[in-house]
Length: 468
Image (cartoon, rainbow, N blue to C red; front, side):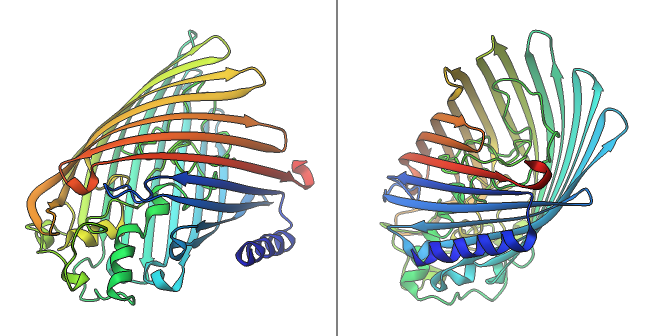
């Protein structure tokens, strides 16, 4: 209760100071029987509270977003994320638009895991142009810089996506896109490898440190700024998938289901975690890590030979069809190839701690296939049924045996993911209920797992000034 009160004071103080045009409050409750997404299941409940403030100043939107998440069975993983930024949309000619945003982020964990605190700078730009009334060209670029307290994790990433959308009078939508990505770790071979936690705490953190982000909690429900209002409209029923190649079209257990009002283009996936780092840890319950957690397994066969950067190239496609006024169906696919580089860390557990490779778009090669049906029930209740299959390899990530020793065999995963989602939008607030079931297979026995994930959320929008 004390932490909730502190968050409320922060929200109200920020609101009064900024005199915002819009204030959004959200609360989400999550439950799962496999928090860490490994063969050793552990149940937990998570409460997440978020807020978003927007203020228009001379055509430039200033925004502040915050999210506080509390884990009941693993309270040491409780954390707070704060974003501050600005964005702007320019109209270019009669049929084009340009959107630019700049965001600063701070992530703050309890003292036990303070080595994973980080500051980040995110720059994003998107261009959209109607080539014809039914053909749209889109291009977007994202630059992310992260600076961790434990500097071995520091990295910069870039992503460039180009897509073409075609709409037909039959309410059929075709999309195709090509994406390039690059991620560079500044010093993965740093000698600064001793975190300020004891051995047992370190082992727990290495398993679970980014669990909540992989479940989509990091950004807060609906909090991510996307390509801006009006930059990705009119895609029709069932076509709300992100067009960014390799962005994991909701392949995770979908715990980020807020009722979010974010204006994104789908890059952060409505129904599942996008690039959230997380749970797929090579160490953890049931797998010995040795007496020294920093040298808990023999070095991988790769390590520094792979350099410090990873390049990827991806192609994605979507076919969607609206049927009547209430039914929409779609099929999606993503294929990703490596251009150069692999996991640069000497020990596999180091790489797992930076990002969960299953959700990190730069860390895998393979493909994803998905099918989705959306239906508008009486009372304007939206129902969504989704199935996704993915098969991924992780270059430079080796399978560990039961003693935690690298085997020299690369990790390969296949995943089946089912989702059912109900949502209802009212004038001032929105409600959401989502259930996900995941069956993950892997040649690493640690990652043969099943998981159930449930999310219930509410979002309340308050408009002020001209936005009323």
